[in-house]
Length: 359
Ligand code: SF4
Image (cartoon, rainbow, N blue to C red; front, side, top):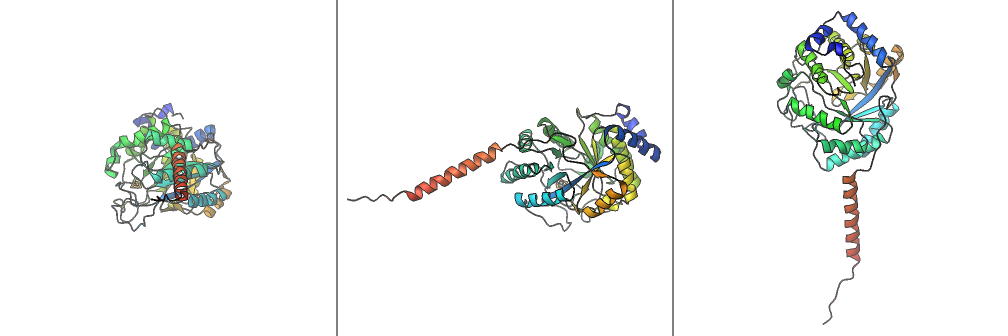
């Protein structure tokens, strides 16, 4: 993934972001056409495999246990129900399934084993699998890679400076480490941000600058507009103007010509015309389906209609990278072998004739 050397400083990125809108969009559209097929937009689905009860304090998130948002917490879904939802998403045109769990970090327990099985199952359905599970060690990333994970999502959310105003329970550095761990395991990186949280334009550009500073910038950069949820600290934030989202998409497109820019949360507030400008300016993916984790999102049908009107086509899975191979997971296999041995042991024990001692 490369960066645009003409816009790799705060000053140049700011000047780019503040260009007259139509010039900015035109420049983005021109770059987009050099690196991507402008008619192709990937449809992705995002499901919440474990909802709510999170110990973190991300100021925008209704899943943080400490905020009273009325959100009902749910335990981890089963592999079968994830497969069911993946089938439905695929039938509706999605080529990528993102699975999100409201965890601070991944723990090496039974739930993680289940997620590994989910990754194997969905990868075997020929869909790109992305996970967003919180912080991750290199070993855990390796396990997910071995299971067939295509992408790991971990957003930086905003600039390093503004981040502290939104989250206090973990550091910006922690997020960078997780991204690095996914990268080291050979998983593609999906990382982006949210605009409309009360940040300055400098912070939006600061987010992009953080990606510029990485050895390899993210393969995929989701751009979200805040959906202010009652009960969260950001509940009073006014929705951003559609133009701001278009500017952010276009600036990201130009700064990272090869990455896929994903138009993510906040689409329900956008007109089709505004979304069309985002596609023109380089958005190469949307999230489809009525829910984005826990926030509302346009229905599949509405998006299909939009694609028809705009002449867009859904991008196939693995157009940007080879399909990973799902290997058996050594930890799960060892547990299964242990369980079989135990069962055999019990079986044999129950067939042992009782020893009777005759005096
Ligand atoms: S964004 Fe993720 S880590 Fe932050 S509170 Fe929500 S679920 Fe937890």
